[in-house]
Every structure is written in structure tokens, then in C-alpha cells.
Length: 67
Image 1 (cartoon, rainbow, N blue to C red):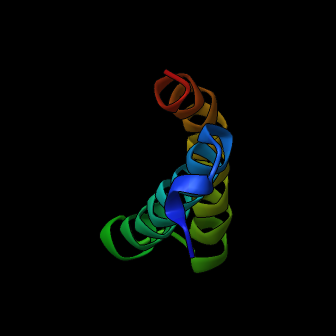
Image 2: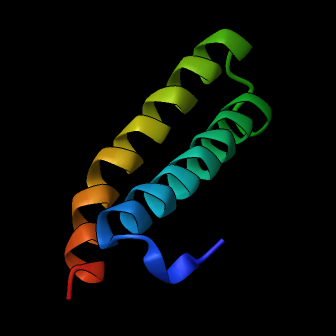
């Protein structure tokens, strides 16, 4: 696979997805184990955290990789 053939938008989307997924999982575990929140509520908050990270980071990373 030629990684240099990816467009800047591809790199931004993939990296934002990776960071958003890891951030959501971290948020879920932190809320569930650290704060003792209900597991279903912690899962819902973790998913929300992941989507928020993705939505914020994708345009930011697209601007960085677009240069």
C-alpha cells in the first residue's frame, strides 16, 4: 500500500477517527470506573465524547495536512 498516495483529507479523516475512537473509549472507562457512573450512561457519554472529538479534529487536521 502506497501511503503517499493518500490525499490530505484521507489522512485527516483516518487520524481523527483514530483519536476520536480512543478518546471515546478512554472517556467511557474513566466515567465508568473512575466516577462509578452507570455503565450505560458512561457508554452513551463515551460515544458522545468520541463524536465530539471527531467533529472538532477533522477540520483542524484537514487544515494542517492540507499545507
